[in-house]
Image 1: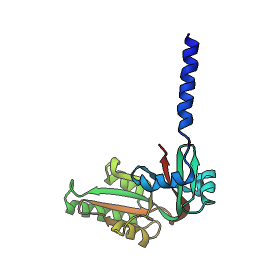
Image 2 (image 1 turned 90 degrees about the vertical axis):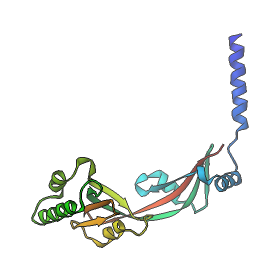
Image 3 (image 1 turned 180 degrees about the vertical axis):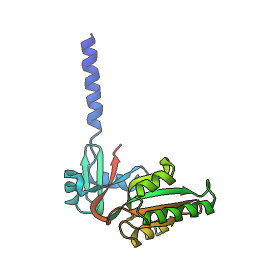
Image 4 (image 1 turned 30 degrees about the horizontal axis):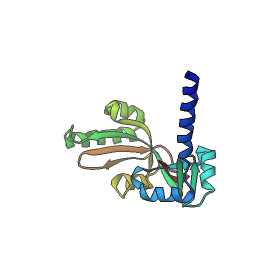
Length: 190
């Protein structure tokens, strides 16, 4: 009797799976159009290997269906990535005069030969020190951080007041890198 119940449950579940066929290309296209709030977007880069190659051969708007996983190619991406190190200042926790004094001291010490690492260890809370960060400015609105990154050269240290609450001392570690990618929208068809 147990074996009959097992066979019956396998049959019922396989019928249920068979009824949920993957969508056609048009159904997938309609699904993307009607369900924008539940889709997610990814950018695949050249260093992502085969997956980048697969999507880069497609045209914007092409649909890829893998079972119930749907992918729609949005288009290519040409990004500029800035590699930098930062010391963060929270203007709410320290008086502005104290922050300005620390920043001037840090800049003077850096120009006299101290490394950024030494200065960061000395002047910043370890939680607010970033030894290396990659900042992508492609989708970044015009702001002091973006213009600061675009206007400075490697090994230059500069100050960015991001808002009335936050400012950074930043040093570019290297020349900006250009990176090609393919933007892809993803959804799970239900």
